[in-house]
Structures are given as C-alpha cells and as structure tokens.
Length: 296
Image (cartoon, rainbow, N blue to C red; front, side, top):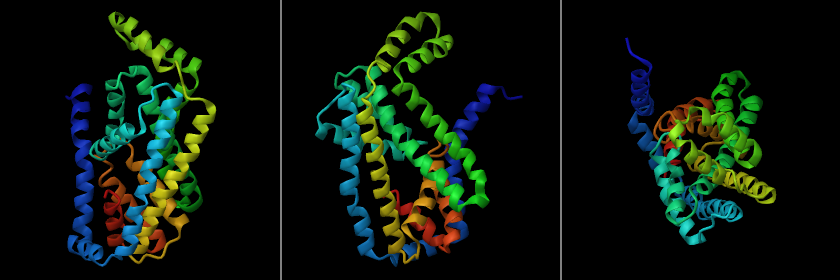
C-alpha cells in the first residue's frame, strides 16, 4: 500500500502531464489540421494590434512592481527591474501555476536587498494580480455562467490562497503573530532563531496604503489590456463576441489554469476556453486557436 509521501510524489509527477493529455485530447478530437487552417485564416491586422498592446501592458506591469518595491525599500532601477520581469515571465510560462515568476525574489536578493523584503514585495505584487483576476472570474461565473456554478469551487480556492498571504503581508502585526504562533510550531528548534529574524524582515515594511491601492487600480488596468488583446484575437478569427463576453470567458479560464496543476496552465486553459466559448457560439477550433495564441 502506498504511503502518503509516495502518493504525493506520484501526484506531483502526474499533474504536469495532465495538461498535455488534455491538450492532445483536444487536438485529436478537434483535428490539428483544422486548427492550423483556422490560424492560417486569421486577420493579421487584429493579431498585430493585439501584440502591440504588449508595448503598453508590460511597461505598466513592471512599473506597478517598481512602485511597490520603492515603497517597501527594495527599489532597483526600473530598466533592471524590467529585465528581471521579462526573465521571470519566461519561467512563469513553463512552470505550474506561474510559480516561476517568483524567481524575482532571487534577482532582488542578488541585488543586495533583504530576503524577507524581497519575498514580501514579489508576493504582494503577484497576489494583487491574482486577487483581481479571481474576483472578476467570480462575477463572470455568477452573472453569465450560473449553470456552471461548480466552477466557483476552484476559483474561490484560488481567491483564498491569494488573498490570505496578501492580507498577512499588508497587516504587519497580524502577519507577524501568524508566523510566530502558527508557522513557528512546524519549524525545527535549531532553525527557529533564523526563522524569527526572517519573519521580522518579511513583515517589517509593507507598502503604504496609497501605493497599494494604486497597484490594485493599475493591475485592473493591465488586466483590461490583456482582455482587450484576447478580444482582438477573437476579432482576428472572425468571432462575434463582445469585450464583456471575452472578459467573462478569459477571466474564468485563466484563473482556474493558474492553480498549480499543469505547466503554465497548458491544457486546462484550452479545455475551459472550448467549453465556455460555446455560450457565444464560438467554434472549438477558434477557441483552441485563440487560447494557444495567448501564449505568444
């Protein structure tokens, strides 16, 4: 009989493969040649417009991170943070749940910043993005996909696991008490001194409320740019769907695919796009093609 450790190891190895299985199944049932044909018929103008929005989205995303870092005393020059962001984005695409983006902690630490402050900064920046996305996904599910309320289970889990660390890091006293009373119990005694010093720097300097709220607004704006990119891809494939409809489908699909199940959400996002887009009469080939183009 398998013990819990072996079962966990098997699960960790199998889950990333699940995404590839889902993707290959979709490609098999839909027919890869039809997907290739659909992409070849794409309107290049809308595709280029969608890609051009990256020139706005990426600098704003980096500035949001830079703004939070400056407020927390872990500031690095903007051009260097831009480079760190781009490298981390690559790792986020090839890791489950986009966890590779947290390599930014190492980049900040290598620049001589405190480890605790670096962790706090990167986690806050990432969790602001995730909370905004999950809230949009919840509204989309309740308002437009009420027949599929089971989708709320993974989305609410995603929201909880994003909001909790954000709350603890923003509320200095609460976070410090949680770390010392709860987490300290599972830390071996010989490492407790190091852990306590680490938690002090982790919770020592959250961003100001003004900067935090500005980052939330900026995050919502960058998500709107992202949704507009997908909307333009929808138009590129000749699909008749509103921007609001695009937001609903994409926010649900992406939020669930961010759960650390498969590499970069591959397969999960495509399957959800195919299923949810049916509400708007979008063919499976177009939905799959649009989702795949979203990785570009």
